Image 1 (cartoon, rainbow, N blue to C red):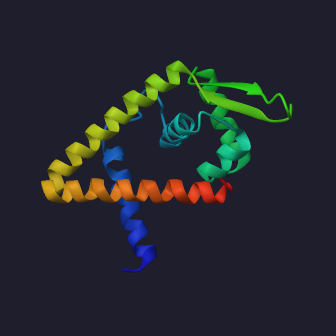
Image 2: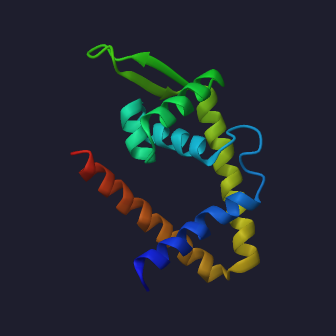
Length: 147
């Protein structure tokens, strides 16, 4: 299968269960906010420039997203001691709780999706492939960031 076609189908497969569920209706409000919470959970702390790169969006878009989430109490920020121009962003306790709730909702959305469209074996294969893709993505990100 061509990579472009495969990516289109894979993207649909990963986003469709979330779109049709009740995920993101009140708390996090967007898949981008969810991705940022997830990113900060793994990284512990990042500057806005790195967040922009990791989310694949413009710096001003990431900056606006970060400030909206700070206002909601999901994130905290502080100036970098070594470079006062940089703002370091972290997940708050409230942000961690919201992330956990969202992850449970996403898991539920996928379980429901799997029950409707996949056999148990296909669902298991999907989970295994997802785990492999996750490990590959982590490896690529580390290499891109020179780690």
